[in-house]
Structure formats: C-alpha cells, structure tokens
Amino acid sequence: MASLDLNLDDYFADADGTFDEKTCHNYKEDKEHLVMKDFLQPDTKMSLQTATESLLGFIPEHCKPGSLVAVIHLCANVVPWHHTAHLKLAWLADRLRWSPKMSPVLGSIKGPKDSYFTMQCFSDALWMDHENAENYDPDSQSDLDQWVNFNAYLANLDALHFTNGGGETRYGWRTMAYAFRHPGGLESDYRDPNDEAYGRRGRDANVLAAAQWILWNGQNMRRYAIYPKPPAGSTTSDEDYFNLEFAGASLEHWQVWKQGFDDARNNDTVSEDVRAVATRAFTLMDVLEKTMP
Image 1 (cartoon, helix red, strand yellow):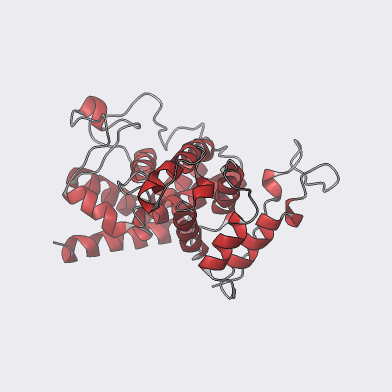
Image 2: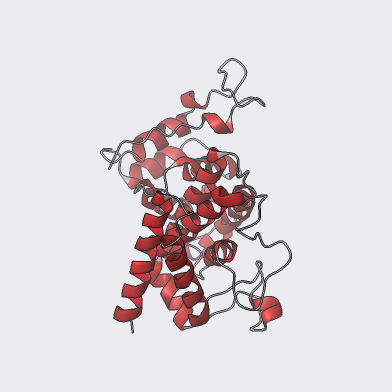
C-alpha cells in the first residue's frame, strides 16, 4: 500500500482555491495532524493505542471534543477510498468514543456502559459532514473525490457496528439512492444521475461512492437485505420507505443495486476506472448471494 500524503490544502485554501501559508491555517504544524499523518501510514510504528492516547492528550478533561472529531473527518475526506487507512480511521473513532473526554456533557460518563453519551459529538458531525460531502460540485474533482472517500469511511464505521445499531447504514442507503433509482420513486430532491446539471462526472462519482458500501461492508449490507430493518420512523410504504431520508434495504433493493452496478460496468459512457470498480462490486454481490445463507 502506498504512503499517504494527507494533504488538506483544499480545505484551508483561499476563496480562489490557492493555499497560502501566510493567510491560511497552517494545519501542517498542528500536533493532531502530525499524529494522524504518522498513524495512517502503512509502515507506521505507531499503534492504535498510542495514537488514541496522543490525541486525547491534546484536549483537557471534559473539553468539547468537536475539534478532534473534525480532524478525523477531514482525514476521511482526503484518504483515497481504496486505502486501508480508512480501516484505521474507523478503529480510531471507535476507540476514542470510550473516553470520558469525548463526552459533550460534564461528568456524564461513569463507565464503559455509558459510552453512548459520546456518540452525540460523532453523530452530529457525521450528519453535517455527510451533508457537506453530498452537496458536491460536479465540476470539482476534489469535491467528487471527497464524496467517494467519505463513503468509504462511513462504510468502515458501519462494518464495526459503530453505533451498535447500524446508524451509519442510513448513509449507505442514501448513497445507493443517489446512484440507482429505487422502485416506487423517491422524494423530489433525488439527484437523477442523468441530469445535465450533474452530468456524467457526478453519475460516475455516485456509482463509485455506492460501491464503497459493497467493497468495504458487503456482508452487512447483505444481512440488512435479508432481514430488512427499517430506520426509526420508516414504513414499508413506497411513499416513505423509498425516499432519501428513510431509504432502506431489502432483497428488492439488493437486486436494484446489483443491476445498477451491472449496468454501469457495461456502459461505455462510464469511465474505465469506475467500470472496473462497478465490476468488482457486482462480482462481490453475486458471490455473497451464492455463499451467504
């Protein structure tokens, strides 16, 4: 696996897109960034425990942990979707959530069973960062890359059952809804991948983002399809169950996704790289169908 640059210049660039250390935040000197850059390297000597303790050491007792979560999510946006560093990011987030320092409420954590108190800072940040990522500019390759990369991170979180209830899976269903039309229709804000406003670049990015949930988290997605568990507040009616907010999983959905990847891999207008990834996703889905109960 190649070394990781972890370049965040796009996030701290001026309005014209240039990065000037005199006017922009020089994140490269931040202690958090230095720890993350070391820990995420394939050949690092830094263990998960050391990285966790180092990052927690930068915040005082009961300090609001939002900035630390932001650093992790910034990295999730720039780490290439195919890099194993996404596994490390997911494990790091999972380890951090057990610390009392990550609680947004003073003294709210009394023991390991109270770790759910720390989920507020993560869940709020996940929703905001996912919303930012999905509002990409199809003319910006950086935006498209971040959309795909962040889905890889979310898929890895869900593979760890991060919220003990498949909380991140809703983002996967939402991403699938962007990439492939579900039967029954969707809400009016659904992005038609053939819409000229987004064009083929946006369509390809959606397919690539959807593939992350199969490549990183395929077994879980298959489980959800076999035993549909609608998100809270969802119903099985087409009106609610297939819209973006409550898009869920079912065997019917599974076949829609699989057919979508099959169509993408056989579509000459799809980029060669995306066609290759769509083939991998389709093949894995086929294998899971044949090998899982």
